[in-house]
Length: 124
Image 1: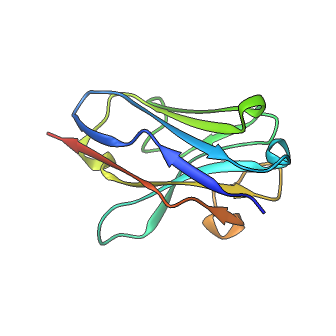
Image 2: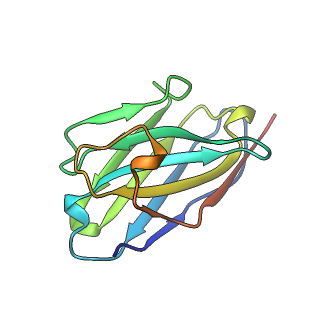
């Protein structure tokens, strides 16, 4: 079992930056692929970024490529999402997820554990 707790969300103006963190419980964190997804009000949950268990491979949605960076600190059981040049369309609840498969995935159905989410609101 893995428990995930996100933090770092908030209300910012367009162009600002935020760093989300996801703290994971469990001694097997380093074996999980990790991902970030987001869900805007009234919309489906969308892929944002993913990272392999050893941090060597990353994936990004086209809408965030070049602006967001996913990273992980296996010693701290934490995965991060650095978000720069934020836009109003980035407004959503951001969820962290863990996948038993170490490679990381773009598909939400591949993930086994989910956090409760953290709200990010970007004003224009």
